[in-house]
View 1 (cartoon, rainbow, N blue to C red):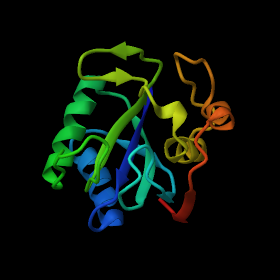
View 2 (cartoon, helix red, strand yellow):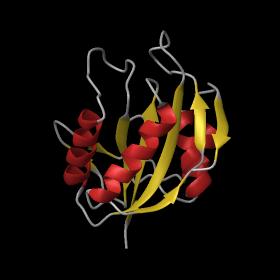
View 3 (tube, rainbow, N blue to C red):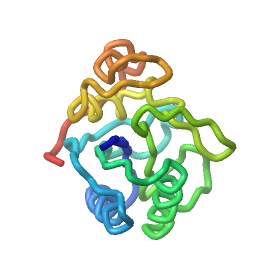
Length: 162
């Protein structure tokens, strides 16, 4: 069965609760969670004038196509209070489809693999924890190799089991 990797992040409110509720809501919507990384406290990247994040990566069965997973994720974000007032700004919950098996997809509303995942330590550290050999279908590198080459040196600190 193909696997999708989904990144979760939160820097508003009860961040740990937001990640837990996000994973539960994905499961209720038919996205079966197979693996959970630890939880990581991370510094904001790109837009740095905001609070620190808690991030996690989930390995999920990929029975659903990428656009359905995206729609489910956006619905969950809204249901947990996410409002988009500023690009890459503070959020109660962010759900990103990182990889979907070996899918390469570029549409107006969705890019798979995630177009910036290879530049973000807060994505790669938890991904390597649960799937070090997951392969980026465009760059043809494993998650471990992507992390070794990642230019992002911001803080990614493990705080709890997933």
